[in-house]
Length: 204
Image (cartoon, rainbow, N blue to C red; front, side, top):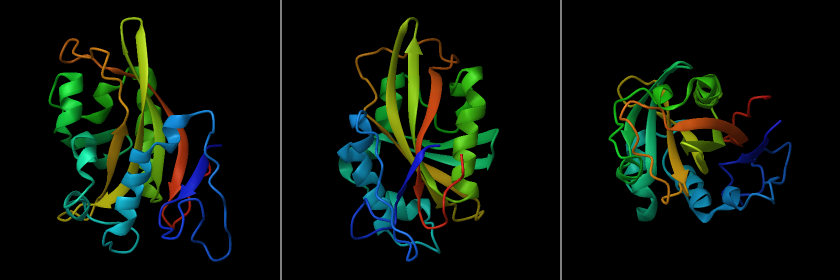
C-alpha cells in the first residue's frame, strides 16, 4: 500500500493535522525525487491558498504559484476515470514533448497498458478528495526515463466539478520525445503515495 502525507498541516509537512492521530511521513529514502524541493513547494503553495471546504479553485491556485514551477503545471478536467481532459498543459512541458497538449485527452498520451492505472489515480484524487505523488515513465525506442508528478484537487468555478492540478518534477530534458504527433509518449505510471488533505486517502 502506498504511504500518505498530510497536505494541510501548517506546522510541519511531516505531521498529520488530525486531532485523533499523528503520523510521520514515510518517504522512500532510496528515492531522492520524492523529497524534491519543487514538490514540497507545490504542496505548500496549494495548502496556503483560500479554499471552499478542503479544495481551492484553479484560479486561486494559478494566481501566484512559485515562478519556477509555472511552466510545468498541468490542470485536468475530470469527468470520469476514462474521461480526463488536459485543461492546461504548461509551456515548459510542451517544449519538452514537442507538442501542445492543452485540450487533449490525458489517457491518449499513455500507452494502452498504463491507461487504467493512470485514470484510476486521477479519479481517486477527485472522488475522495485527496492528492497523489506518482512516477511517470516516458520512453522513445529503447530509452526510458522517469519523472515525478504531484497532483492535488481543485474545484472548477463554473461547473463545480472537481479537477486536479499537477506539477511534473524533473522530467529528463536530455531525451527527445518529439516522435510522431499522435504517438503516446508515457509508457507507465506508478502510484508512490497519497496526499491527505483532510478527507483521508484511498485504501489502495
